[in-house]
Length: 90
Image (tube, rainbow, N blue to C red; front, side):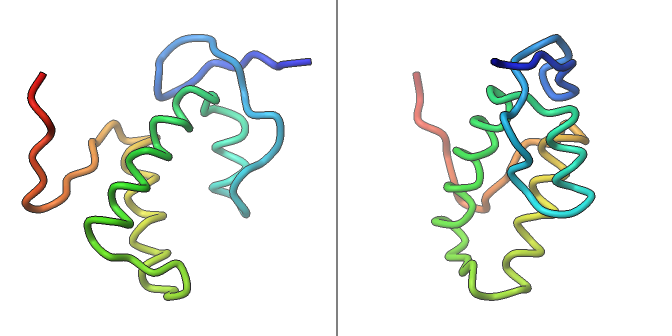
């Protein structure tokens, strides 16, 4: 059974996460106010960041960078910017 939440990223009601995907207080905040759709958008941005900046999830400093970018993207409305990346033209 899916649950509906008000997604603060999409600014509308949407399907919520099935369980807490991220640990700690940030994870609780994501579970309560970020939809599956918004999380999927973040996951694609996260993949781009990891690949373009060559981040290692074994490195605590890299994980901290990723968490900061995630908070800016999901809660502050800032898009992910990767130096030198040009999105494909439509």
